[in-house]
Amino acid sequence: GAQVISEAASQSCQLAADALDLFVSLYGAEAGNLALKFLATAGVFIGGGIAPKIADKLADGSFTAAFAEKGRVSDILHRIPVHIIRNDHTAMLGAAYYGAQQAEHL
Image (tube, rainbow, N blue to C red; front, side, top):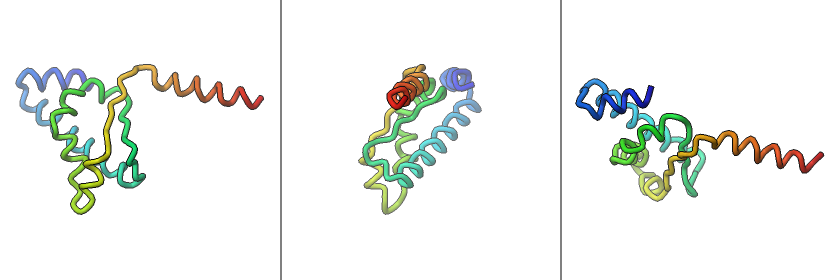
């Protein structure tokens, strides 16, 4: 998965490095599209299993460039903060919070 490609890319495997570059560019571009679609001016939070494993690559500037370079609206996207969720238990925390909220209505 992500860990294998990240390791291979860091050890001079050009194919893995190219695949990771392409993935990060597409990931950033689509995250930027969604940020625009929802006007997420307070920030974008990226979760899941892949982002924390490739955090160094996401921070090298290629993700940010793909995220923000959208022509006339680039200024808006450059001001939107992007955060990587590193907690492996975020989904469980969300489910617990939701359960607690629902229990109040019983």
